[in-house]
Structure formats: C-alpha cells, structure tokens
Image (cartoon, rainbow, N blue to C red; front, top):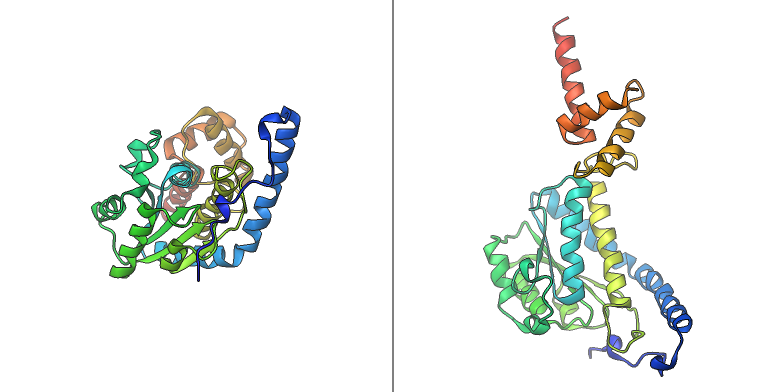
Amino acid sequence: MKETRITEQPSHYSHLEQLTVEQLTADINQENIDVPKAVGKALPQLNRLIKVIEQQLRKGGRLFYVGCGTGGRLATLDTIEVQNTYGTDGTQIQAIFPGGISKLTQTNESHEDDIKDSWSQLLQKNISEKDIVVGFSASGTTPFVLSALRQCRIVGITTGCIVNNPNSPIASEANYPVEVITGPEFVTGSTRMKAGTSQKLCLDMISTTVQIRLGRVEGNKMVNAKLINHKLVDRAIRIFMERNPQYTNYEEVKQLILQAGSVKKAEEKLEGSNKCSQSHI
C-alpha cells in the first residue's frame, strides 16, 4: 500500500502573512480542536500498545522512546517528568535521541538521517527481548527511527510507533503501530504543530496509564512523587493528612514526609513501626 504524506499537504489556509493576530490565533485554535478527535480515533491502537508496554515492564523490561525533532524532544521530556511525578528511576523509561539527549537543544536536524546511531545507542543500553521500543515520527519515514525498529524486528524486540500519516514505512515495521491522522498543518509541513500536539497527548496517555496500572498512583493521588521543591512538599503533606486524618499537625507530617521521601514511603514507614510495636506487646 502506497505511503500518503498528509502532513506535507498544503495548509487549508493561505496568505497567512496578511492575517491579523486575532485571525491567526483563532484559525490555529480551530485546527488544534481537531487533534483530540484524531487521537480518539486511534485509541484502539494506542490501547493495544499501552497494554503490551505494561506487560513488558511487569516482566522487568524497559520502555525506550526513539525519536527526532519535536517527537524526540517531547518523548525525552516525558521520560524526565515521569520520574518526578511517579517516583521512578531513570532506567524504566528512557529516550533515544540523535547524538544522545545531550544534543536535545541543538537544531541540526540532519542527524535524523543517521541510520546507525539509534541502534548503536540501544545496544549501549543492553537492549533485550524483555524491552519494548516505541518510535515517534510525524512523517512515518524518519531514517533514525525506521532503522531502530528494523533492527529490533530482526532480533525479536517488541516495537510500537506513533505516526501521523497512514501506511508509513515505520508503521509497517512496528508490531503495534498507532496512526494519528491530524491532517495538513496550519503552516504547511510544520509538524511541530498538530502532529506534535497529538504526540504529546499520546505520551501523556502512555506514561500516565502505565504508571497507574503499575501502582504508582493510589486513588487519584501522586503518592510516589519526588519532593523536589516547596510546592511538591506541601502537596505531599496535604495528601498524607487527607489519607491519614489522625495526623493533624502540619509540621509533624512535614518532618515525616521529608525523612521518608514520599507519601507512600512515609506511610510504609509508619506501618512498619506500628507492626513492630504490636509485636512487642
């Protein structure tokens, strides 16, 4: 089936330079409204991918995002934020970016044509059949991503992808492809816009759903969030006091939280102390 580059088709809008600020923002916003609808149509594919990611992580495997440009940067951001939000370490979900994540702020996109770097980085991470690799590419053709998925297929590593064109080479290489068809961009070919927004929405769903399923959220609270600033410490204290109403002293709870490192660890520490006390009765 022939590849269709919808993301490269002409914008539905023309003479953009002649539009007012009000017209531009209204039109961009109108285009953005269609993005969640496109993601919604792809939910069955996305759900299958999320289920296999959970399966691999439960077996002790890791999730690797592979991407360039907007998709690669958004994926890298997700691997950082998930650590703080859910208290995971930096190994469970990792990003593979051209030249390494130290190159994240560089604008030399020619590296996306490198067909060796992505697989080389995965080998350095000791990639194995327990892991899963998910590629991000608006076009569905990015050589850096495509080569990684092809090598994974050869050695039997499970793969998925998020792409924004139908019938793409990358989707054909993935075991679990997700095609989010967002259509032509407001500025022709600028896939940092609607395509990038759809990728961010998918990343939010993947990491959030997986972490909830793995028990990193209880009720609807981030009980494993890292205490990296005053706001998060305060939030943790309030969550703890809500879950444990017998504790009413804010400063006392603050000390418990800071000593333990998270709401969940504080509760486990207290539970262990209570069991120890009862065993001596």
